[in-house]
Image (tube, rainbow, N blue to C red; front, top):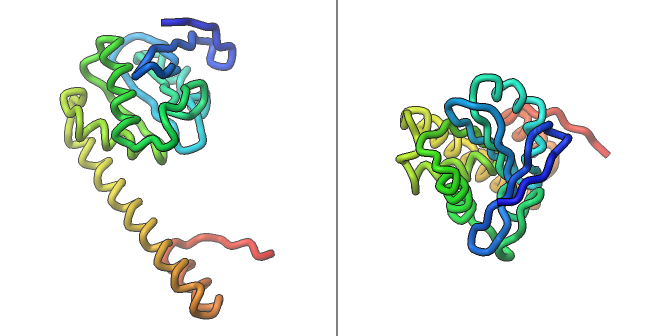
Length: 175
């Protein structure tokens, strides 16, 4: 385990190896463990505002997922299950048994994969069920957006604009 002072967090950045790949994480505070997982094309620094607040009475781990931040790539593609295995490896290395998991965007999908592969880490599975519902809702919206994109090639933009506004209540900027 290598340590480096990270002035951005005012905490120590640490590394461990997972399948000969460097995994970067920060570890701060004491108490029950809260794990923070960032979204796609982000890194653990996205949590910089919330870590000091949570770490007042909890131990907070912010992990850079495979291919993000200071964590190296393991391959060309990193499936959610592989990223969940990397998170589990960090938890195992630190001998952590129970966690509260907060995942943003892709981090939510990694959280879901971790909860399915390693349910023993979670104190209350009821909370994980809420994550599953959220993930299903996100998948439904993603599928809806794909459908709208397919249809948009065949019909006029006015229908698409109205349909999207009614479904998602987005504000549009026209160029």
